[in-house]
Each structure stands twice: as C-alpha cells, then as structure tokens.
Image (cartoon, rainbow, N blue to C red):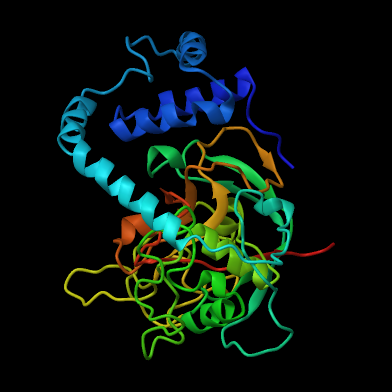
Length: 369
C-alpha cells in the first residue's frame, strides 16, 4: 500500500511535473490550489519550495505556479452578478434535502474502503443468477506506465504503477442490473437518497422502479459515485481504482492512446462522430480489448473508486483507493465525447453526487492469492 504523499520531497515531484508541462491556464492553477491540503501543504510553504525546484530544472523565468491567472477577474465579476440566484438555489437544495432525507434501519456496516459514504445497503445481493452481462474477467497483476505526455496537464508525469491481480466486469452495469439492486435496497429508488449523495438528475430517465422501455441491456446512467459504490457493495464487489481501470483499458498495449492502438476508430468504440447520430448503445456492441473487456473507450464514462489528485513522478506499488471528498475520478470516453477525450489516460473529475447522462460504471473485485 503506497503511503500518502505528504513530504516535501513528494510535493517537489509534483511541482517538477507541473513546471515541465506548465500551460498557465486557470484550471491548472485552480487544481493546484485545491490540492494543497491533500499533501498537507499551505500555499506559503509551497511557494518556498518552488525556487529550488525551478533551479533544479534550469528554469529561470519569473513568476510562480501559485500566481492566479488574470482570467479569474472576469469569472469573479460574473459570479457576483449571479450571487442572489446561487444563494436561492442553495436554499432550495437544503430544503429538498430535509424533505428527502430517509433513514433506513438495520443498515449494514460498510467495509473500510468505503469510509467516505453511507452506502445504505439493507442487504447484499441474493444468491441467485438472474442478470445477463454479469460476467467478470480475471486480469493478471503487473506493472505499466500510467498517464500520458500528450494529454492534459493532470495526465502527467507518466509514472510506473504495480498492480496485484484483480477481477473486472466485462461489461458496464446495465439498467436491468441496477433495477435489481434498488428493488432489494429501496433507499436508492429515485427521489429517496439525500442530495449529498445524488444530485437532482439521479435516475432522471426512470419512473420509480421502472427504467425506459427497451433499455434493459444499455449501460445505466444518471448514477452518482455514492450510488455506484452502494451497487458494488450489494454485488459483493467494489469500484475499480483509477490505476486498475487504466491498466485494464490498455489491454496490455504499451504507450498507446486507445485500447486498440494509436489511431482513432469510431467504428470500434461508441464515441461522438460528426455526421452520425450519437447515442448510447447496448453493452458489448463494440470490439473488446486484449483483456476481453468491452467499451473501455466509449459508450459511457465510468466512475472509479479514487478521489482526484495530481500524479507524482514516484513509482507506485499496489496503490489502493485514494481519498478526496470533493472530487472523484471518472474515466473513459462516451457517446458524447470526441476521440481525443476517449483516450485511456484521459481523466475527468466530478463531485461524488454528480449524475450525468453519459456517466455509468463497472465493478471490480480482488483476487485472493
């Protein structure tokens, strides 16, 4: 298990990676500031480390990574204009949370890896076989280079990761699978969970226990990280870590952008293509990768168990779920994203209660050795 990155040397590695790939964008600055507490750093302390990092890299340009880009000025002005509406909306959500709050009795104690969320799982999955596409593949442990030097700033630095063997769903979780989960755990029926666990779009296309007709084998969407974690626990599994997801998506290929190679092939993955009608498709309709896993580059994006954090250049051995209560990592492209956002190293971050029209999940499990 890799220890938390809290030392000065570990944070210097982060700064080296950012200076090597600095773009000077507002998003880059915002991420850096938000991630300071994760490494037990303050901005003042981080600024004192920066000169030695720049000197070691041979960088003598003025300025600091911690200087706020001018773009924020206009953003602040816009924010002030909508302050009244924002406060009204927050008040509305607070009132909705009060009315929607439901406490279930005899809830199970969640396992330690889910210590950030109350899963509200009354019972785990019944011992029966009723779900098509409920198959897993065994993936051998190994090591790989995680990240990309050709992508966004948070995909760098590229670093080596070692993984133990694990199991991963061959397909994304479907509507009919999720329906069985909420039948056995009514807390997760549409309209029941707290707004801290799901946003207002949770199961947006459902009517109570019923999903849209004909969508049985389509990947379920409009589910939050909390709901996906609860489903995984009910199924006796868990969400894959970010490293497990990328390792599985690469399918044994080294340094490639996609599960099949470096070229974009819209007919291999369900990704957005100009001139075509873009929509989700039933799971398993597109080519699988070398590990026998489907839809790792398209159809829907997928939640991982990890909290969002910046990469370190340090080698990682058998990383476990990382903690960040503010943002969780989503991986994979979808029917709404173009090929550049379907790369195996592409990272998305969202609040854990986010429920999107092209965001679903698949589950994983440990292999006892």
